Length: 134
Image: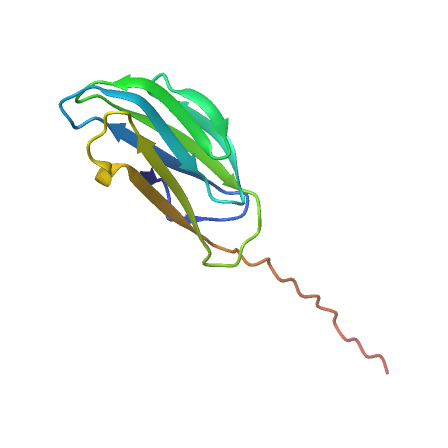
């Protein structure tokens, strides 16, 4: 999994890219990809390069009947930060993939994080000249 930026500000967006691939020699069957987005974000858009079927959205669950050896695909999720967090708060997106005939679970989970950056509000001063008359 990758993320388009290492930081995010309130109302800012980042893009998470989930990549799945079949590095084995058998066709993977009945794949289920579960993605848990961090709290405080809203989904702006989702695009997939494979014909995933979305089953749920909290967390997101996608299914795919099969994935041939050497085949890969991506799901790109753009999210916007909608809640205020303290400066430096880490938000983590995590995903897990399962398949009926998967023989190795060692490479079935991934995560990516962004840090919240709080942009201080501008401060304004008022200048009032002091005019003294005799």
